[in-house]
Length: 158
Image (cartoon, rainbow, N blue to C red; front, side):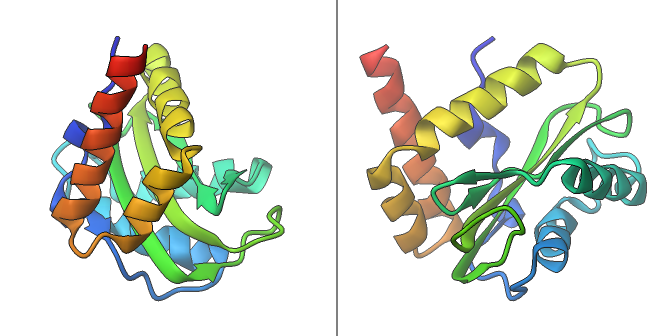
């Protein structure tokens, strides 16, 4: 299944200026963008699962990016929120601050789609040009547009 990241994003779920500078409060700030999402039945339970997963293994993937996520019974489809931190967030396992946090909730019944999404995000985000575009986007729409453009480019090369 081809996962389209740009289609999963909504401008109301993209924060270009997260305030928190420590891991758990920053994850909370980004995750709260999903509160009230019709595809996430119980935000509190999802958030607890998200933190439990983060305690087991921090989700910093390098390049100043973290992908906190939970496979949960409380999601009816994949939902995604993004926070950008110009000042950076301290993650325990990272030598450098995290500047982009992608919070993902995935139904437990969709393991293949979840793996496809995380794999696609990792491939896209290893591109320095895309990371630069995401850090300089002036609006959530511009942020999503940069991802859409990168996804189209990736289709052309594969």
